[in-house]
Length: 244
Image 1 (cartoon, one colour):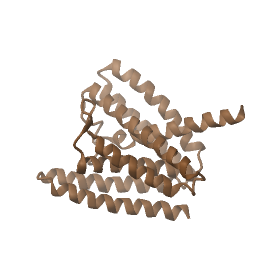
Image 2 (cartoon, one colour):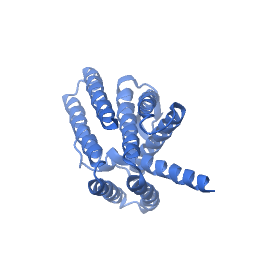
Image 3 (cartoon, one colour):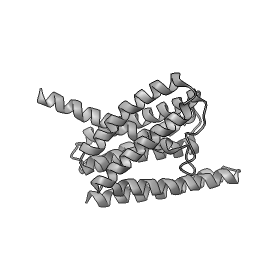
Image 4 (cartoon, helix red, strand yellow):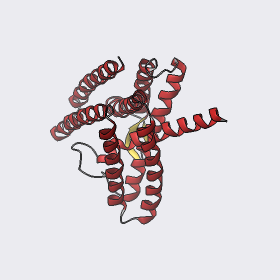
């Protein structure tokens, strides 16, 4: 049943996303920018589809997780190789988050894997679309100029709605689902901000051109790594408290 719900949510949100992109493009004159949005959209569909399917199989999902961590780490090194004072602390933070992310990926049940990823996908996608469509108040102009208060609100709202839809499938009360959704959204936002800060400190716009329409491989997975790590950390502390 959860499988059907997950795919229904993904399909519905991508359809909504397509409508929002069309509305955003109506306000855009630059044809190249319009083209890039649709390319990004199509690549995002492929990424989400592959990730969700991979969660059903242990070895492919482990391979995907390791690929995310290693390629992301490679991009960090590539853009920060000339600024060791930025690279070293960046790699330390990234390594710690990657450990938590790996444990989340290998020790969580499939409902938890899917729910965390789905909430990250919703927050990441709709905070961008909400910001592009309604954004006026810049949130972090010196770190990430494109982030807006309106985008943040839109992302949080859709994440909360999604969490409440999922609550019965991950055995949470509505209140717990709200807290869970807020936590994942906050972790996603934090991961995105850290990645943006690293780019600013190293003086680059994009991590790489690996994913068409995106600012690099890590640009697509920074929020997921942070959210997975924070989720695992919460579960680990919760287990310790219960044991005590």
